[in-house]
Amino acid sequence: MSDALAAVKTELPSPIPGYFADPTIAVVDGRYLLFATTDGSPEWSSTGFRAFTSTDLLSWEDHGVAFDVRDAQWASGYAWAPAYAQANGKHYLYFTADRGTIGVAVAGAATGPYVDCGQPLVVDGEFDGVTIDPAIFADKDGTSYLFWGNGVAHGVRLAPDMVSFDPAEVVSWVPEEFREAVWVHRRGDIYYASWSVDDTRSENYRVHYATSSAPLGPWEHRGVLLSKVAERGIVGTGHHSIAVVPGTDHWVVAYHRFAIPRGNGYHRELCFDRLHHGADGLLEQVVPSAEPLCLPLGADELTHGADG
Image (tube, rainbow, N blue to C red):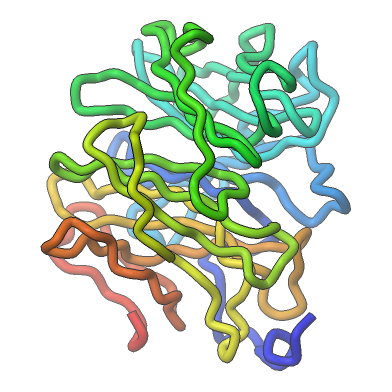
């Protein structure tokens, strides 16, 4: 642990107390909806995903465990990296289990409880790299895409049932310095892919991004999107997700960092910051704020700390 991290006290609080990681954020039914991996266990050995909701990103309601991977007949543990989608009047939770297999569970309510579909969606070994870290992108035409991978990134159009795809349609590529956790979003005619670099146990864990004119690329690397602020003890910033506030051009990036104080790659906490798109279509680098972000849904303006 660095001296800078050890020296920082609690003046940089997470709005969601406790150890959590791999956040996926969306706006559903007039609330921010967030799922996260329960953290704090050696070798990331937790089994459940927690659901939270908020109207302003500052005050969060904990809805408890939305899904435990042990409830899937094919899985036994290691619940990592949830991803969320809404379609067909249902709610879908995509997840990693058993260190390298992706499944999907379904619920009638956004916060669950979720029920496993009965079989994995992507089995480790089907495609190059490690089968972890699913993410969902829903395009403007209603088509949904699944992204995943460690070492190699993969993307594919999901079938309308949201629980299957054609393996022959999978597009695979290796983004620059790619480690894991690719995320895709769209603004206007530009698609953005962003991903985590380095190891989540490293203080240099960070996020790069690229742009494209299509949801599955090809992608043009653009550089760093999010990285540590070591002098303030903010390190290990990565495994993010991005959401837009409906009806506005306000964008939010959720991510995890080493918990403050004395965090590490197994003791992480959640953060939220504003994501800015420049006039040239490129993303401005996110500088982690010294204060929690407050962005009420429906608000014209946000409030943030002096560093925001």
